[in-house]
Length: 192
View (cartoon, helix red, strand yellow):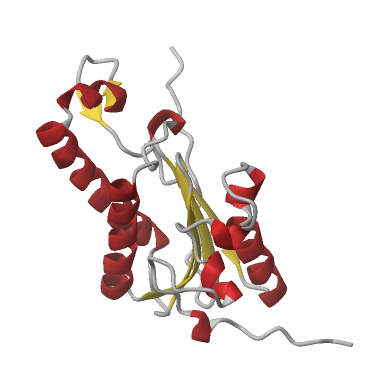
């Protein structure tokens, strides 16, 4: 009998690299459509930033997934710790909220295991997507890509119209719900 294999994501904790992180809701369900759940994610990122020492360069919260571009400030770090800190905090808050205020919603979070055990999930299993980014031009391309997500999905006309991202910060229009650490961004050197 063949052993089942679980897809693993190799992570590289390379000092000086930024990380473009993407994590999806359980079964790609739109658990991030309400301002309350979006705020839980904002709060979790902000708490993890203080505890695990990283800068936030960009983010966007979509209905069923989120993107965050972070830059760890320590030479020794574990990007998995950052992801776990963010995701576990949101999952715990969501489960408490659902059990108290919307118990019928639990069925949407139900992940029944082959052995019959039931787990309730806010996030898709696994660590999510992690891409190391180190070239300044690529960093800014990643920021633009993230901020354009709501436009591609036709949730807004311009990136800065989407409240749950840092696009308006970059456009100089307003400060979004999550403070960005733009002063730590690398400079793009014009080679012309």
